[in-house]
Image 1 (cartoon, one colour):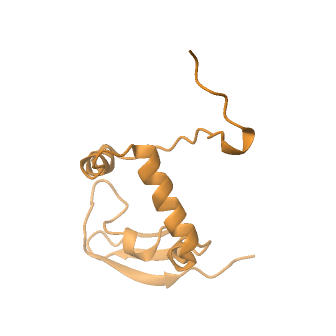
Image 2 (image 1 turned 30 degrees about the vertical axis):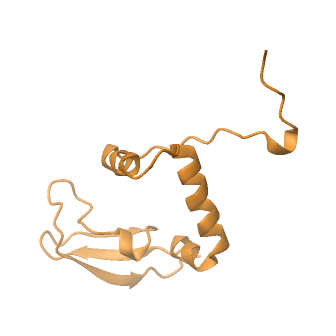
Length: 105
């Protein structure tokens, strides 16, 4: 006996994301019997309901400077997600937020 065919309104679509292994390991440790898909779905639903959680992911470019190697870079990552120098050879945590990059358009 096969599975019932789902109506088109309930068919789930595949979404592929790539994550660092340490994030996957931390996620797996918090699943509590749920699947990765359901946990990620819940997080996305929560973020969409609380629109203020998504404001960190706007189109602004945030400028950073490393106080050790004196390198500067810009990223679209939210402020609380930039923790180390972007140079792999430096990887210092001694960084300083410089502000939002001016729009050059």
